[in-house]
Amino acid sequence: MMGSKNDVKLLSFLLSPVGHRVEWALKLKGVEFEYVEEDIFNKSNLLLELNPVHKKVPVLVHHQKPIAESLIIVEYIDQTWKQHPLLPQHPYQRALARFWGTVADKLVKTSYVAMCSSGDEQEKSVKEAKEVMDKIEEEIIKGKKFFGGDNIGYLDLAFGWIPYWLPIWEEVGSMQIVDPLKHCAISAWNTNFLSHPIIKDCLPPRDKMLVYSHRRKNEFSSTLRR
Ligand SMILES: N[C@@H](CCC(=O)N[C@@H](CS)C(=O)NCC(=O)O)C(=O)O
Image (cartoon, rainbow, N blue to C red; front, side):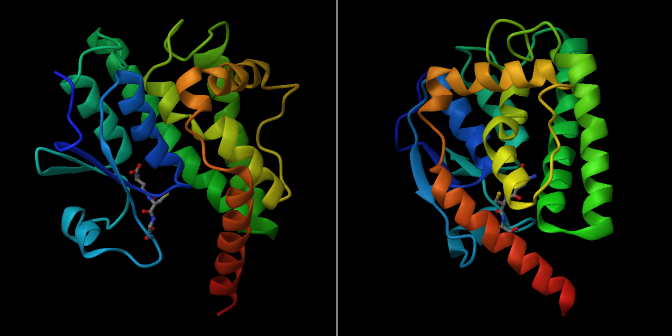
């Protein structure tokens, strides 16, 4: 059952790391979809209607029914289109993957706040993010090509912002969260992830990301000064 362009629609934002989780999942599965770019500074009525609770992208619309929250969407995609399984089959392994998915969601926020903030607040967020990286390094990626083993899957998509977005945030925030000497397994995975044919062809332009990240950091610090 492949989706036709008419029944799968993705509302997203070019530079969104969580929007990319969904795009990658659809592409790994070979599901055709219509992509709708959202202006997150001037949200469309469509987005407000489809995700009235959070008013955020990504939103997947399948047969006119909306689903929000990137990891929930990825799970829905995995259950709807069976080719190239993303989550493990065993209930315990599935639960573990979902658990680390919640860690990925918390870590992306902490790392983003670390980029935007400065002084004590930044120090606190960087420390918190580094501690979580240590756990990822020790507990789930060591000795593996991808998080689920030999094939790219759910947790690779969940943590997929680490190899490409995080280095830009580290540059803009003048900070370091992943230490290549200490986080060897994460660094090796970064290379594996970015060399995957589906992933490497579906990444936003670096120059736009730099400009956008600087803008978000400046906006964040002017909000704090107000
Ligand atoms: N936990 C949500 C996060 C969604 C999210 O933060 N989306 C951002 C784009 S990266 C957004 O729509 N921002 C608009 C806003 O915050 O008003 C998910 O994984 O889908």
